[in-house]
Length: 186
Length: 195
Figure 1: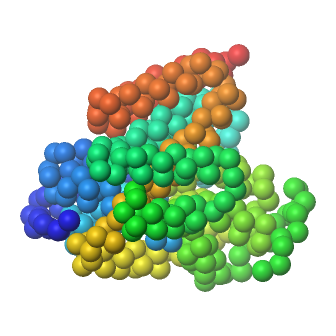
Figure 2 (figure 1 turned 180 degrees about the vertical axis):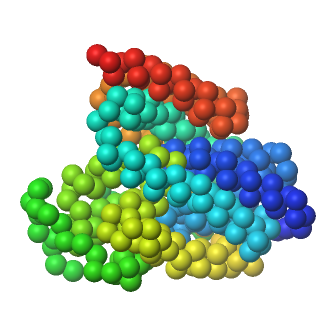
Figure 3 (figure 1 turned 90 degrees about the vertical axis):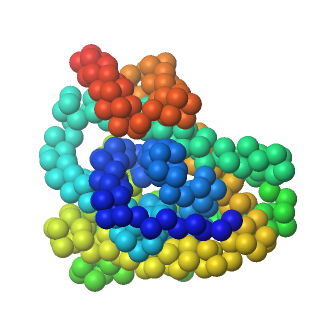
């Protein structure tokens, strides 16, 4: 996989930044739930990076220590280098950070009111649906590739089973995935 | 590391000594977190440092989950803000992101150099499949919380399934779904909360 990095114009960079500003406010349940929309914008609409590059960006961030939101920086980096990373990362963090601090101060005072409770109750199912959609979209390129389909399905299934039924650290799974992948099995 | 002694639920927690302490602590826990930091955060902040009781941690996490933005980022902001205001929030957030950001971008650059080596590409492909599995597993685990959702399990599952279909299958823009379907879901919840 080569990296045909497109040089983005200032207007395109600004558009990228603006898109992530909006996504930031929609990222209920974590930045990863907005991954499908990032995919739609960066890969589907603008063709700045390929499908495989998109998925490996997320895989690199998962493989590295730190919060998963850093995949956003890797995406920006792969689209347009340091400026791209700056655009996507500040875009995804700025609005949600400002909103979270204000809402935290406001909401802790009104924790038990009907409005706050309705907000929590109503948005929880959407968060779960979004997580499912994200998992689906991340799995698709691996499951869709016939040569490695079986290995990928087994690896995904094992990961889910281990995470749901054991207390093993995901580090071991990431290591297992790297090993099996390097051997050409997944 | 010694085994953390169980924290009595209502014991007032110790706190960070300074903004630098916040920064160091969040850097430390971020660097231990592969594939997600929340589990490490719980161990470090509650069991080990006792900055929060379990109840406080769960409560902060619940609020983090409904607010936009990554849970752990929101949690770091809230914890920092509680002790040292905006400066505290900034210190905790910077601790969480600064060093890991450098590491992940270094890895991304290295990967671009070695992407054509089959072993490296294969390893990344395997890790990517696991990453997909980790996200699916999180969704599976959270699904059980729908049972306790005050909308009831049927409506809750319905909204979750509809969200999945609109995003994963029909590929609707997220904004439409969160604002449109979200408004409907909150309105339904508002009705249920009355009882």
